[in-house]
Length: 174
Image (cartoon, helix red, strand yellow):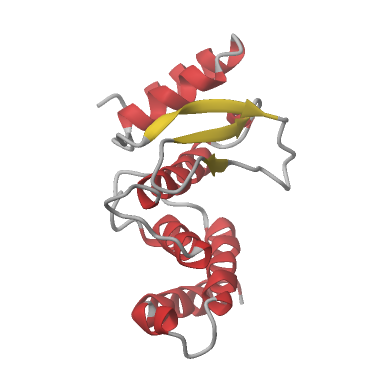
């Protein structure tokens, strides 16, 4: 595998010539994020520094496309890799074999992976301020599962890990 710096240079080269989709494809292959249910990338409107939107679109149990901002690679590569991983998790969640119909559960699983990298340890860790942001997003979806629900019970241990991470991050900033 090429070094992170080599990959960064390749991504920047693609970005400079307007090949955002080629850069994203390169990354999902290099980081072993590919999935048979993935149909491809499409571009969407430019992201803003405080709002980077990527979405996974397609019918449940059908092929999925991921829409990424045309300026995706103007932002830090470690963040973009985590966001691409998040969307590729959604691709796998929308297969016949692994179908997760509840959106809150899908989002919980994807945000949890962004925090702890249990399925994809090869993805670079996020800085603390991003971890804090995504932990709070994860907890929003956990809370939407319904207090005391079966889904909340299923993810109770992961929620505890997330709460502990937030407490740790908060203690570091004091």
